[in-house]
Amino acid sequence: MEISKIKRQWNTYINDFENSDYMDIEKHTSMALKVGSLIQEIEKLNNSLHKINFLKHSFVGNRTELHREISRIIENRTNN
Image (cartoon, helix red, strand yellow):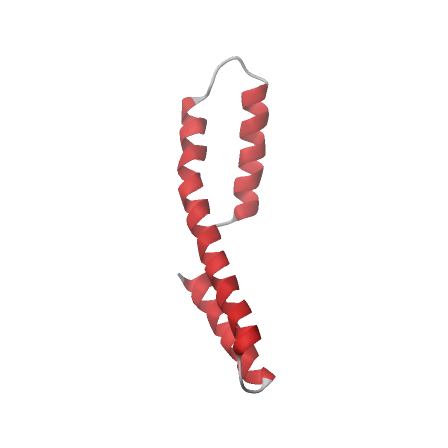
């Protein structure tokens, strides 16, 4: 999901909504449906961040292994 694209769409939506006397139901529905996807994306990112922070503070071993594990977490998150 490309968050920057959705952010631009949201800004356009808000601008159109504020400058109009009516609500475009199609645009409103489209933006509303994206909220659930964005929440899921944020939860995945937050979960990955928690895992990485846990590793940074509890990892026993050399830094190369730590970096490898962090990369694995990031790759698994982006592949989901």
